[in-house]
Amino acid sequence: MSRPHCLVVGVGPGLGLHVVQTFLAGGYRVSMMARHEGRLATWESENPGATGFATDIADIESYRAALKRVVEAQGLPDVVIYNAAIAAFGGYEDVTVEQFEGAFRVNATGPLVTAQELCPAMVERGTGRLIVTGNTGALRGKPDFIGWSPSKAGGRIVAEALARDLGPQGVHVAYVVVDALIDMPFVRRRWPDIDESRLANPADLAAEIYRTAHQPASARSFMVELRPAGEPW
Image (cartoon, rainbow, N blue to C red; front, side, top):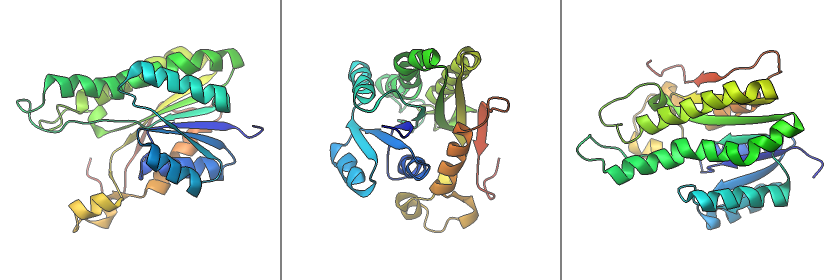
């Protein structure tokens, strides 16, 4: 309990797990949130110092309860990385209203609930960091991303509102745009001939998120954009 505490919300085998490992290497205790208890148990065994908490963020009251369990078991986090996301891909005629609204629940409401549960105590303590990860969908709308981009843009605006509110109170809020395909096995299976220069190394992304979370109070970012050298933009 003497080590600082990082909570990573939305841990998967790509960026989320690398963020966990980067903060562990930085001397943190890490709480991991994901839907799958089996995966969490595996990652706990493979990453000493990490503790899993299963939850479904789409169930808001269940998510609130899970955040309370984290604080009770591990203490108030020093750093929170909100990396959870859900998407529905397809044209405007294909995406259902239920899919559209469900994406907002995870991608936009989730960061708000996270702040509601954790940030008042961070303000009282005088320090805290909340980093929300996003992607290019948060910045522009494209036809087949109509079930994804609006909710990601909503999450970005939630983070910006939080940053303007909480920054003067000692809590650093930042939004990290990952404008890239992340180098993971399923990406390589789907695009076997992809140019290597267009793939972002998840460990490198995690290192930049770690650095953003440790910016000094006199030089802090809100919007951080990360992309590999070969990504067109």
